[in-house]
Length: 359
Ligand SMILES: [Zn+2]
Image (spheres, rainbow, N blue to C red):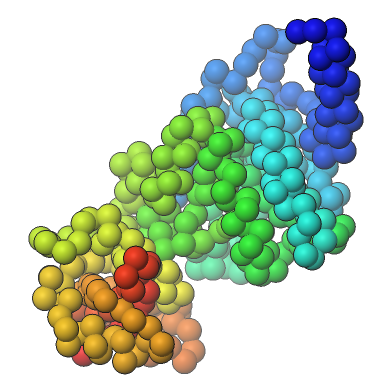
């Protein structure tokens, strides 16, 4: 390195450090280490690939081994995150904000809503909900203490500010699909995955949450999961006992991957049927892709030029009387069988749900 370039590098790093301090990431408000008894202790004690969901609880000794970084976010809340995941978040934030420069709504800044929650804090949330809303509501909306991924410190809920204004509420956040697209595209390279994918509620136990990301500490694994559009459960081969069984049958037309893409697509609609539980999915067979059916779905899809059709037959259970929403067509607490889902795609296009119901 010549003297000149060395000077340039030093100058550049000074500028970079200066720029970084503005993200709020390099200077946490109150950096602290909740667990470490010694300076040399690292987070070797935690398994970054640990699965915590409604069926798998936090591994023993987790809270003792966890090292935490604490910051204050834009709405003034204190947020705690596992330290390595926090550093990865800072790198993610920097890149996402750069990607979003020139966003039409104004300057976008990534923020952290909630990350680490102790078992005691989760217990408090649980108790508050039980008192306010009762058991039925609580069990469907709040993770049982010990079974929330937030207790790992590796699960982060994101939000953002646009032009200095907080976009904080879930119902507002979901509107910004363009911003989420930019964020999600950067996750894997920093070792994060999107945890609760659309159309996978029967596997993860949660409906789509664009803001909930999970740190895995391994960009290669994260990239494989994100590229395949699968859940962490599917990657680990630990499918929930509530997940629908799938019978792919035999097909000369479609690979299992193509069928999975179609199944995920119709499940996005099914997830809106509150309280309904999908039990089984069966591929209807290659004869579903008949000229007649292609013409039928084209007649339903306005301006579409579908060239392929796929059909699935499902069994599902309707909600109990107490859970049944007003105005829904289902009889309470009944097993519906052979319910059909029809999807189609144009040449080179993705599957679209076109029709469903009983023929
Ligand atoms: Zn979350």
